[in-house]
Image 1: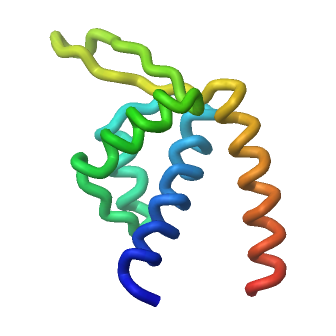
Image 2: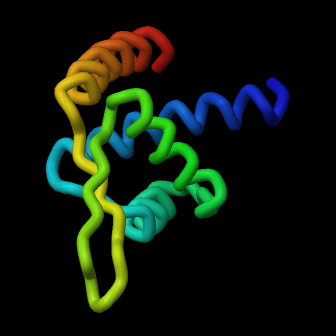
Length: 101
């Protein structure tokens, strides 16, 4: 497999991971970078922030600006559309893992 295909796979996994965390509580970029690094995904802000913006633009996340220590921090929460996508992704992941592993 070429590197571009692997990158596409991991970006999909990252999006599911973002939806998972956003389904529990609002999340922000620095938290997600650290959380994803704990799972072996070394994602740069230059990749993460456009991904968050895209997911919000497509209706999977909603963005809320909050004042934190004198600075505006963007928090993202899952939307009903995002929750539906996460549920479908979980089913597909379960099915794929059972077949592949």
